[in-house]
Length: 183
Image (cartoon, rainbow, N blue to C red):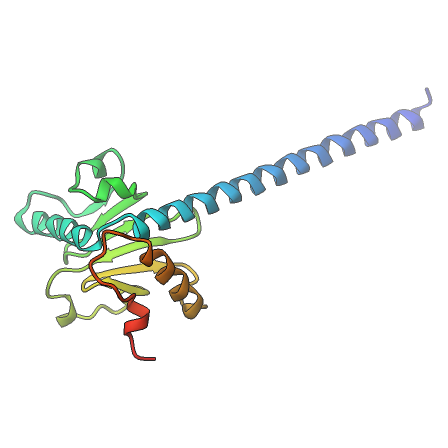
């Protein structure tokens, strides 16, 4: 075989290997994206369809009381530490729970670059407005839902959230929050 032919064969083999590697990587990214999307939908369903929001707020406020009394340190908690928190926090399977010194408790349930979760504020939170918004949607007084993309399409998000909330048999209110709000 001539030197030129060997070079052409080597280039062809390298091209096939590179194209195969790129294809495998793209397939991996697509599968990862599908898994991430599925996980976000499952987290949203657990939070909006299967959770008693008042019980969740009460559990988060218990964590705030524990911080004030010195029983719990301010910080970020992940499994297995977060599994010892009061129910329904462990049932939601948050990625992490943030407890800050001011009493804010945040449960992050999103995946990757798609933040999703709730922020629970102390009983006196309206007296001290934060330098940021509380969240995107108040589920019960003091418990705010947030999700990436909400501010871009709030009407579409409210419609989907109302639909999910209507499936939640643990909720005590009959009218979804967005219908009760003046336009």
